[in-house]
Amino acid sequence: MQHHYRWRSHPGAAQLEQAIDQLRAANIQLRRQLTTKTNLANGLKLALAERMQRVDDLNAKLEQARVQNRKLDEENDHLVESVYRWKD
Image (cartoon, rainbow, N blue to C red; front, top):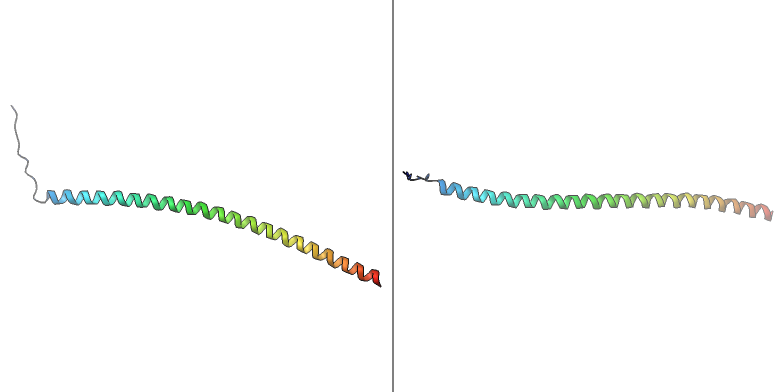
């Protein structure tokens, strides 16, 4: 024998279900936004690290050029002194 029970829904159940559906949709949208922003942030971190490495490399080259310029200046000064001594 089967018993059929009549389900009595709560008066606000439809509204609650609708609110739950809206919150689920908002949650999905927010998760997608978070994923997108996280991926963007990770990409920016990578780009920043690469840029910082490039800046470090360029600074090292600049320092090497400065050292070379100092050596050339010293050599130039020495040659100028030699020429002046040779003239006298």
